[in-house]
Amino acid sequence: MAKKLNLTLKVWRQNGPRDAGRMETYPARGIDEDMSFLEMLDVVNEELITQGKEPIAFDSDCREGICGTCSLVINGVPHGGRKGTTACQLHMRNFKDGQTITVEPWRARPFPVIRDLVVDRGAFERIIQAGGFISVRTGGTPDANATPIAKEIADKAMDAAACIGCGACVAACKNASAMLFVAAKVSHLNLLPQGQPEKNRRAQKMVWQMDREGFGACTVTGSCEAVCPKEISLDFIGKLNRDYAGALLG
Ligand code: FES
Image (cartoon, rainbow, N blue to C red; front, side, top):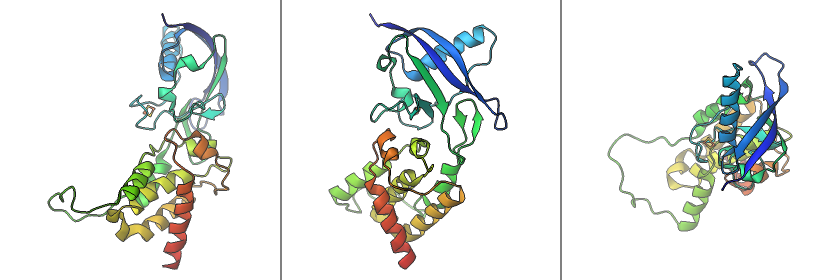
């Protein structure tokens, strides 16, 4: 039978973007160790609703580690610190009975808090809009094998494409840099033949938009790579720097 946990949560509560916010303490009792972290928050919210209190606002969608919306800093670490794991895939068996757990939103100026643990990640959308796409002429769908791609290149592009845009890299960085996100998004297109015609423009426009949004500079501390639930490599930042420098020269 699954073990039950009794926990204490210290949760960031903030009524809106202009509210100063504060930590509040809640008990989380009888939590099944097989629950995910978000399911545990669901249980706490049901209890709060039963008591006539405002439930804790937090983001989630897929709950399968795919969409990147579960933006929680758990015990000071984005997504809770389990290697290659999003908050929605983090199970309560990773915590100890009686433990106190802090839960906070991503903290970075370009990700303003909307309410409690929900932040506005529109800045990432605007970076994608600046160049994270491939322009194609309309027409019939090309044959799947019409453009041969070397296995090594395809694998690298897929590694970069694994980025789910959750923003943990920004939340972990002391500079609130978005370089790992931008590097992944630029690289997965720039590596492929279909992305080559807009390679230079893409690197420049996405980096410029990143700067406009107020993200900080990368000082290569590697905290982004350490918390990335998709284990995106820091090497992609090196590649982005080369693509960007090449674009300026070319
Ligand atoms: S809810 Fe989709 S990745 Fe966590």
